[in-house]
Each structure stands twice: as C-alpha cells, then as structure tokens.
Length: 288
Image (cartoon, rainbow, N blue to C red; front, side):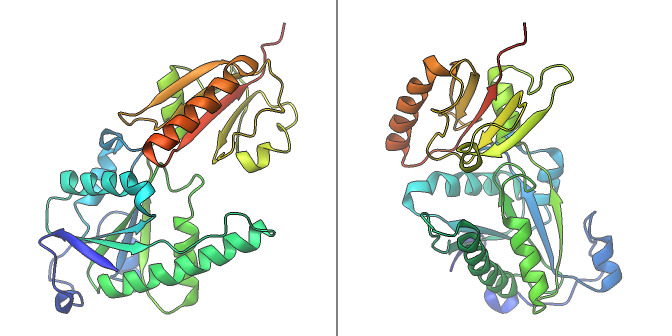
C-alpha cells in the first residue's frame, strides 16, 4: 500500500478523538445518531475532465483527509493521474493519497457471476484494510468514482460487503457525478431519447445476444469487443471514447457504414494510449 499526498499525516496520528466542535458533513446525520464517526464519501468525478465535478463534489472533497485509489497498472496510469489532479486542485488541506494494487480479475471466466463475486470479495477485504488503517474516529476518507457511483461501478456494492462483515463501523454517503452516457450525448449534441421514447442501458456482454425487444434508443457500456457486427446495419450509432478528455474521439453515422471505421479508430487509440473507455448509443431507424 502506497501513501502520498499533501503533507501526509504520520500513521501514529490516524486514530484520534473527534475534535470538539467538528461538524459532520450533510448526509451523515445518521452517523451522529448511531455514534459512527468514521466516514466515507463516494464521489462521482465525471469522465476524466476536472470541470465535470459538481459543486457538491467540490464541497465533499474539502472534508476528506484520505483519498483511496486502486492502481490498475501502467496501462491505465492516466486514470490515476486524473484523480491526483482533482485532489491537487480541489482538496485545500493536507490529505493522504492512498494507493493499493487492484486485485487480479479473471477476464475469461467459465462462470462470469462467480468470477465477479470472487473479485468483489477480494476488493472488499482490501477496502476494509485501507479504511481501517487510514481512517480513524473523527476522520473522513473518499473513493473517487469514474462517472457516477450508481451506474456500472462496484464501489457501493463493495462497501456494502465491508459493512456486512461487521468488523468495521463506518458511515458513507454518495455524491453523484456526470456519466459517460451524459458526456456522450453532450459531445454529439443529441438527446438520448426520441420524444416520449424509452432509453435502454446495457453492456456489451448483454448486447451479444441482440437488442432488447422494441428497443428504440440503446446505450451500450463496457463493450471491450464492440459486439455490434450482427445488428441491423441501418441502426444509427453515436460512439465516443475518452469522453470529456483532451483525447476525446466522436464518430456517428449508419452502423453498416461507420462500424468498421469505429473498430479501426478504437484499436489505434487503444494502442496509442494503452487503454480506452468508450460508450455508444444505438438508435433504430425512424418510423415512416
């Protein structure tokens, strides 16, 4: 575990009494009532642009003394760098930047659900150890979540696992963030839905089985292999990668025509940066 930051606090000072007159941030009134003084803030930080942070997120960062991050290797060092930049810009007091190696995950499992459960269990044990070591009574730590904590992110589920283990008493709140779905629509200057129409959000793994029945507008996330070749070529696709970042790439058009170009551009960008995060919207042809 690696700890850095602005004027890092010695480990001997991590456990301390709550100073007289210290206020508990909004969202933690239940913690006061239950006598829980160790606090965690789960903060959505948008898609890589520090300007995506909401005023609520900026205010939340001012309350933290430790920021927890998982190191996902050199290929994704940019994700760590963005979190550092956010802390340097928006945390106005001494804080600790606590890094830990992300547990290995089986990327080609025979049982997907079991593999994810094992990965979450390993992460829960790691989160518990980090929180216990770095956050004492009266202290506040944060997890900075790409996008929004409610959408295809495991942080909340893992914190629930930690709480269920019963070894560590803490309270946590959630600060929403801008998602890649919103950033995609903004980048293409489109509305996600047609007038009165539904929007379906799914994953590349699920899309491999086809679009949902009567799907009109479908947002696809976490599609590492672009599972759209078998779909209706007359669909319109709005694709974006590195949304909100200086490296942002946007492509749109008839799926049968721009699909191969998206695949080529995506492969080149991934080779160039070592990683890629992308999202796309598929829209059915307009009814006559």
